[in-house]
Image (cartoon, rainbow, N blue to C red; front, side):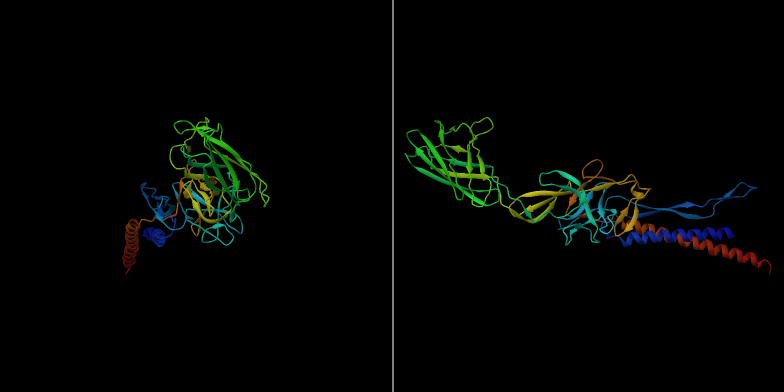
Length: 402
């Protein structure tokens, strides 16, 4: 009967630990990226009665507590730096004081006063740097780029223009377009088209608002109003800028790759007019916001309309997620049981994609936890009954002597 007492005690201990795990799961039902745990039990080594060969169990023990890595549902947020992993993988974050890497599914990131992307506890998110030319670099702290983007000198322009086929000699049509030099300053190009009746062509010349230009040429059309000259796309050069900017060499695109008219310049019998224009330059701009896509690219959006990627977040994969060591604050560390971290970009190998402006919710199933709670409570009560019943039998045994 003493053995049954110890079996009952082992049941009380095991179910007490199980209740603690259930309580932890329920307490974290609203914790971002939390992974619930599940207990497993094992019987204690049996003792054998030598004469009968019967094996009698000695109770139960808590065999393990395993994390359940099913993905929680994703909750939409209004922050572009709230990120979730849609699939396999964990975010990589570094302790700023020791640079030790940790891993998390809770992507509640924000920019700190040093421009680093951090967790609420100040751990810095890790990712691949991207140079201005698009070259992907090494894994470093994800930080905001320079607050000002470099300007881009105009290299190409297009016009949608009709030049009146019924124009008289020396009739003119003027159109302007704003371009940018290598320092980002505006250069307004005034195009003056003059009709030459003798040659049935339109002569054009360019006058820049700053600098100087001698660029000019002629445009002619066939009987259907289609462009027949020039034979190649003209180049407009502007130099001697007072601010010291480089010479502008701008291609005016009016022909396609085969040097045939692309239809942008026409010579129909209607009023000379401009219907469209484009140019590819822009001034310097200030950083307005940051966006993140499903491949984890961080792109700076600037006031000049440019969108420049500057980082790609890194994800880590493990041979055994259940072997990760829990460090608190939604953080995990690698261990011998988990294997080494395999770090790569999202949407590569077995890693999942990034869901921006979302947070992964806890994967705790409240209904299941309540059922487990009832089962554990009844198991605890039953084991306590084993102890009280064994005590009563022992009491009867002692009473035999009376």
